[in-house]
Image (cartoon, rainbow, N blue to C red; front, top):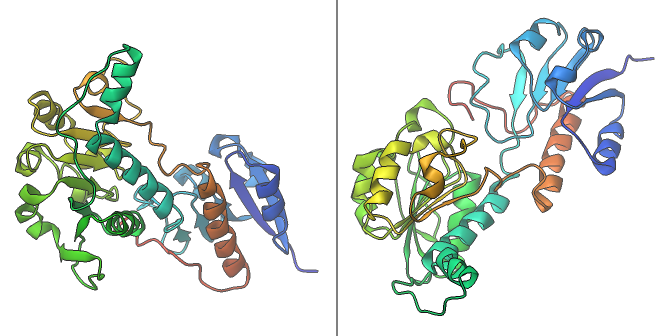
Length: 316
């Protein structure tokens, strides 16, 4: 009889996800709450890791051949030996994060946080400078699964959509113009919303510094759901204190988690969520991520290559 393939699955799981993993044929599944909970005796026979891995564990796993991530981000694995396949959950998060981006965009345009503050104070008044979504110019910096989904939804609501991607090609019909990062600056002064969904690579670190933030149209909205370090925090604080932008909606920030008493918490018109827009357990997203993970495991167990193999040099 063929020896079962040993798979370690980390993170906490529901009865349904446990059932789906255990339904994989020809496998021995070990569930561990986190990487630190993996036991020395678990390591020698493990061929597949689901959820991540560390260099220390790889050294103890001579049979390891595949690592499947629950996340879309994979930029922290350049050290992983090339002979070990690495796949992320690209695509499973796009619609969930895009819905969050639409939500905060509308929230900022309609100044809903300020109306909620008025309610708490039992004040009755009308705020000015309420924007329309229809006809607004929206730029997505990053055109992967998240940025692409955001612009599709924005276009359906009547926005005029523009995109920035590493290589400008295959421009969809709903996007008016697609440019490379080198051409982005000429678009920034025209945009009502600039939405970032960038990967955590060296190329995008500090991309939105004071110069670029000031290039943005006065009264524009910044949305960031990619990586916090794509925006220079001190520069953003300065620009927001001066009132240059209408709002900054941040689901990611630098540093993260944001410490108590950090000035971002109380900066004017900065709206913060705790990196939750694409959480693995964010409603329907839970099932979509699991579908992608299970499908990749099935492919590998059949001797076929998984989808969404990570380019170690690009980090995604």
